[in-house]
Each structure stands twice: as structure tokens, then as C-alpha cells.
Amino acid sequence: MTDARLALRVANRLGRLLGLAAAAVALVLFALLHVLVARLSPVTDTISDYALSPDGWIFDTAVLVLAASSVCLLGPLLRRQAAVPLATGCYACWCLGLVVLTVFPRDPVGAPTTVTGEIHKWASVIALLSLPLGALLTARRRRGPGARVVAVTAAVCLVALVPFVSAYLASSPLKPYLGLIERAVALGEVVLLLLLGTIRLGLQATAQLTAAGLTSDVIPPGGRSGQRAVDGWPGTYRAGRVQLGGPVGGVGKRSVAGHFGGGERRG
Image (cartoon, rainbow, N blue to C red; front, top):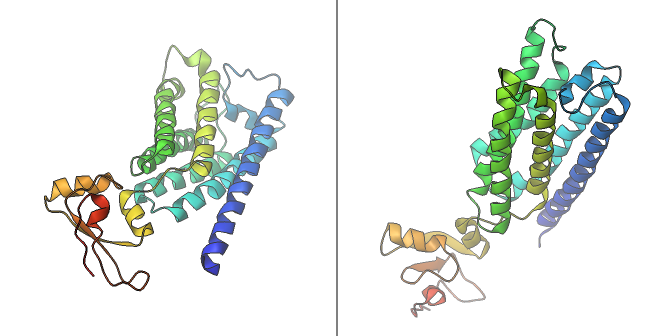
């Protein structure tokens, strides 16, 4: 392992540890708010209502710490695996949305609507929507049980967002339970963030080929059928050939078709 790769691995691990520690601090601060500000109801009042209390600085600190945690946990994921550009944009919207909603507090309940309150409202919705969308875009390009866990968790978060958004942005029979629904959604998204930062999602088939020292020059005899066979790597490609990209162990290019069930070998 080269010094650069070792340094990158150490940096990723440190970033992951810092992200987990920051997420734990954020959760403790949110829990502390529920104890200090007893006049707000966890069932009817939103989490953002704590920002309007005398202890509002704790809310702002908790949200900013969660944004920093997101950068630490998602950064190694984006560096380690070829990120989908749209997924990267979703993660950026999640982090930026968290920062924006601390700068623009929500309007007090019953007060006239202001531009600041509208910005806060839409920043909250965009942030809560962006993280599970980015997770789905990331998971669908991966293989393995970790990717499935992330995909299922993200889907649950998106489903839970439907009643929240309907109660938050418009009239809904669930309006009296807005605070409870929001807390369930927020907790689910923190869990999703921790999964993205810690669970092994698995690599794409092309990434596996590259990691094995193979080139991307797959020779599929059946066109699309051959490509589908490569997606099942390893052990399911029966007809095509994959060639090594250069000398390996003193041996020149050779076909590894025999690895997939064929027997052809070239010196």
C-alpha cells in the first residue's frame, strides 16, 4: 500500500470517527432542548420552535454540528466510491439546507408569514428530502446487503415525509401531530446518515473489475447479454473474455475467460 493510499485511509477513518462523535453530540443537544424547554410539546410543536426560545442557541448549535457530522460521514463515501453527480448534489443540499434553516428562523405559530419564515420552511423540506434521495441514488448503483439496507431506510424516510410535508405546508388532519411526525422523520434521517457513513455499500461491477486489476475492455459476444453477464461478476460470465491490462507476475496479457467457465488461455 502506498503512502498516499495509507494517508487517505487514515483520513477517512478519522473523518468517520469525528462524524459519529459530532452526530452523538447533536442528538444529546436536541434531547437537552426537550428537557430545558418544557413549554413546547413534542407532539404538536416542531423542532424548529426551539430556536425561538431563550435557549435557541442550543438548537442552532445542534443543527450546525449535525451539518458538520454530515460532511465528515459523507465525505469518505464520496471519495471512496465513484459518486453519482446527482447524489452528490443531494448531499450538498442536505448540508446546505441545515445551515440555512439556522440562519433564517421559522415564524412563530400564529404570526404573519415572513420571507425569513418561508426560507426556513423550504430549506427544511429540501434538506429532509435531499438526504434520502441521495441515498437511493447511491444505493441503486451498488451491490450487496449494505446497499439494500440503505435503500430500504431511505425509502421509509421518503414515505414518512409525505404526511409531514402535507401537514407542514398545507392543511391536514395530521396537523395536531406535526411535531411528532417531524421528530420521527428527523430521527430516521439521522439513522440513514449514520448508515451511509459507516455501512459497507459494496462496489459496482466495473469497480470490482478495476480493483481486481482488469481493464474495462470486456468483450461481450452477445452485446447486451454479455454486459448483463458481467454485472453478475464474479462467477457468472460464461462466454466472453476479460483481459488483464498488463503484465502480471511476469506474465504478459492473458485471457481470464477460464475464470468464468471457459478454458481459453493465451501466453
